Length: 133
Image (cartoon, rainbow, N blue to C red; front, side, top):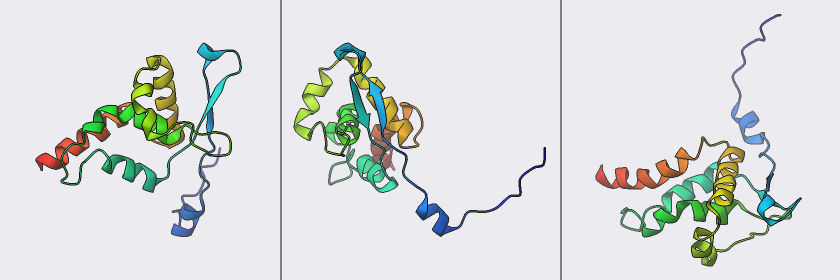
């Protein structure tokens, strides 16, 4: 088998790359066929999400402990892109079945091209490390 020729991507190619499609996450706890569409984040949305882990003085934001719930709010949307949850639902999401929340979090990270759930924990820790530096 011939090895393909190495080609460096151009900025134009990278900018034109399509965003991943939303992923349906099954929620069998709610019945057969029930799904939650989980939408990917852009690089800018992920940066803003990480920055939200800090308050205006760069100190860890008290909401950083709710990072999973906030990711669910950010990425769980209807088929037409409308949010399923609002920031006012964060406490209620924290009371939801942990298995459902973790499936949604894992899907949000994967569809956004980010690494395992550890990325969530890293986002919260980064705000503390930035403060220490």
